[in-house]
Amino acid sequence: MEDVNVGSVIGWVALAALVIFVIVTLSKAVRVVPQSRSLVVERLGRYSRTMQAGLHFLVPFIDRVRAMVDLREQVVSFPPQPVITSDNLVVSIDTVIYFQVTEPKSAVYEIANYITGIEQLTVTTLRNVIGSMDLEQTLTSRDQINGQLRGVLDEATGRWGIRVNRVELKSIDPPQSVQGAMEQQMRAERDRRAAILTAEGVKQSQILTAEGEKQAAILRAEGSAQAAILEAEGESRAILQVFDAVHRGDADPKLLAYQYLQALPKLAATPANKVWIVPSELTGALGQLTQGFTGAFTGATAGEGGERPAGASPVRPEDLPASALTDPAQALAEARRESQAATADATRAGTFSGRPADPGAEAGQRPHRAEPEIDPENPLG
Image 1 (cartoon, rainbow, N blue to C red):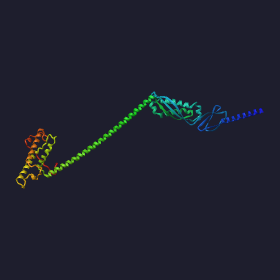
Image 2 (image 1 turned 90 degrees about the horizontal axis):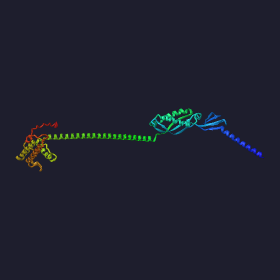
Image 3 (image 1 turned 180 degrees about the vertical axis):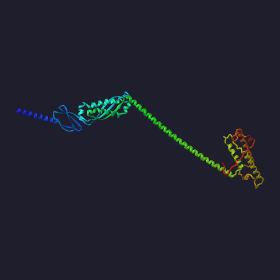
C-alpha cells in the first residue's frame, strides 16, 4: 500500500509540473500587443521582427521580446542648464522637447538610451546657439533659438528612429545682478515714457489754451470794433441831425453866445480843470449878445406893444419865467468878468486855445476869422 501511495503522489506531482510547464509555454508563446506600442522580438539573440498592436505567437524558448517601445509623442523637460552668452553672461535655460519614436528597431539598436542622448544633444546645441548671441538677443529671439534647436536635433535623431516635433525654451533666467539692472533700466524707461507723455499732454493743453485765448481775443476785438463802428455811426447821425436842425432853425449869434455863457460855469465847476480853452469867437459873440439885450430892452421900454426892430430878440421880459434874469446889464457884466478871468488864467498858463497867447486877444481885439459858407444840402461838406 505504501508503494502504491508513493507512486500516486509522484504521478500527481509530475502531472502538476506538466500543467505548469504547458501554462508557462503558452504564456510565452502568445503575446497581445496594446495600441501605440511595439514589441521588438529576437530569435536566438538576433533581431527577428517588430510586432505591432494585436495578438501574436512566439516560438517558446526560441523567440524573446527584447523591448516594448512607446510610439506616442513624448514630452521631456530637462533641468536648467547654465549657458554663457557672447557678452560673457551666464544664463540658466530650461528646455522642453516634444519627440516621437517612428522606428522601434533603430530606437532599440542604434542608441542605448535615446532620452539621455536627446538631453545631451540639446544642451550642446543650446550652448552653441546661445554663445553667438548677447543677452538682449537671447531674451528676444526665442523663436529663432527654438527653430535652430529643432533643426539640429531632428537631423541628429533621425538615424535613431526618432522625430523631434518641437523644442521650447521654458525659461531664461539671467543672474540676479543683471535682473536688478534690467529692472532699473525698465523702470527708467517707463519713467521716461511717462514724462514724455506728460510733457506732450501739457504741450497740447497749452496749445489748446493759447488757441482758445487767441480766438477769444479775436472775437473780443471784432466785437469792440463793431461796437466802435456802430457808436461812431450813431454819433455821426446825431451830429448830422443836430447840425441840420441848427441850420433849419437859423440860429443867430445871440443864441450861440448864450450857449457859451451856459457852458462856462460847467467848465469852472470841475476841480481838475487848470486851463480853460476859451473860443476866439466868444468876444464877438458877447458883443452881439450885448447889442441884442440892449436893443431888446430899449425897444421894450420905448413903446409898449410897438413893433420890435429888426434883429431884436423875440423874447419879451414879461415872457420870461420867474427864475430868469431881471437885469440883463448885470448878467452881461458878470459874464464879461468871468470871461476876462478865464482869459487871464489861460494867458498865465502860456496856452490859449492850444497855442501861445495872442497879444491882440489880451488887448480885447478879436482876430478876424472868415465864417465858412455852409451848404444846407451837405452840412459836412
